[in-house]
Length: 451
Image 1 (cartoon, rainbow, N blue to C red):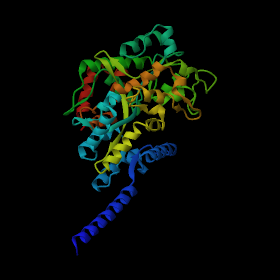
Image 2 (cartoon, one colour):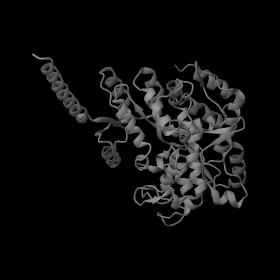
Image 3 (cartoon, rainbow, N blue to C red):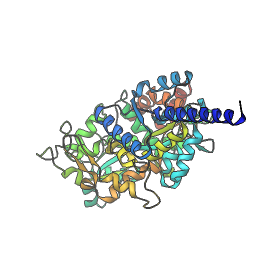
Image 4 (tube, helix red, strand yellow):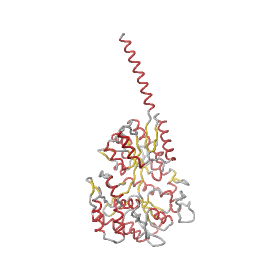
C-alpha cells in the first residue's frame, strides 16, 4: 500500500476516535453529591445545575446523600475508585478527607485563587487551610448568635452584648424576674444545645481543650473567667433544665433580655413561621419583636479581646476521582454567577462566605439580604433587620471557629463535646457543688481520659 493510503487510513481512524471520544466526553455527567436533600432544596439545586449546563454544556447529576451516611458513602466510593466529582460537605470532613486523599486540594486552592481569597470570610477559609492551600472551598455557613432586646439596651444606655463584661452589665440592669430574665442560659446537660453554647462561650475567651498533639489541659485562669461568667448568666435565668425551647419561648414572650441561638430564629422572630410564633403581643405574624432585636455573632472574653464565633461552615470538595476541569468550572459557577441561587436554598442558615467579587466587594451580602426567608410567609432580611444588624450577622464568619479544626483534632474535640462531661461539670459548678478552680481540675481530669 502506498504511503498516502496508510496515512489516509490513520487519519480516518484518528478522526473516528476523536469523534467517539468527544461523544463519550459529552455523555459524561458531572456527579454532585449534596446533603441538602429536602425536596424543595433539591429543586433549587437542579435549577442551578440547569443554569450551569446552559452556560457550559456540561450536564450535572444532583445526587442527594443523607448527612449521617456521608462519611461511610465517601469512604466506600473512594475505595472503589468511584467518587463523585464534587461533594457538598460539612466542616468535619474537610481536613480528614484531604489527609486521606479523597479531596483534590490543589483544585480547591485553584478555585479560591481564581475567585480571590480576599473575597472570602477569613474564618471560613482558615478552617479549611491545608498544606499551604485549602482542602475545600467554603460555600456558606452560620454562626451562633447572642440575640438581645436592642430597644431595652438603647433605653438603658447599654452597650451591645459583644463581651462577657457587656453582657453582665446588661444582666445587672435588666434582670427583673419574673417579668424579665436577664438571660436564658443552657443548663440541660444531655442537650447538644448546651454543648454548643458552652463551646461558644469558651471559644470567646480563647479556651480550647486540644492542641496539635491531642488533649491540652484547659488554661486555669481563662477557664475560671468563663465559668464565673456562665454561672452569672445561669443565675439570671429561670430555674430548671433549660435548652433551646425555653430560650426561644421566653424571648418570644418578651420575658428575656438575651439568649444564645442559631440564625434559624431570624425568620421566626418576624412571625414568618406558624410553628414558632412570637407571643410578645396578640399577633402571631407581627414583626414587632424582630424590629426590637439586635444580633451579636462575635463574642469576646477578658483574655481574648478579638473574640470568636461558634461557626458551622459547609464546603464544596472536589474529589481526586473528578473530571477536574469540569468540577472547577462547576464550583466557580456555584460561587459566582450562581452564588445567590446556592444561598437561596435556605438564606437564614446560609450566610454568604463570599462577600462580593471584583466589581462589587459587598455584592453577595447585599443580594443575600434581599433573598426571601420564612416558611408560612416570606420576606427578605432587609425588611426585618437594619443594615448594621445584617453586617454583624455576616461578620461572624470572619471570626468563626470550632475546637480542634486548626489543630487537626476536630475528631477528638467532637468526642469531648459529645461525652457531655463539660456540660455535667459546668452544671455542678452552677449548682455550687464545687468552686471554679476545682471544676477546671475535674474538667482536665475527665477530658484527659477521652481518646
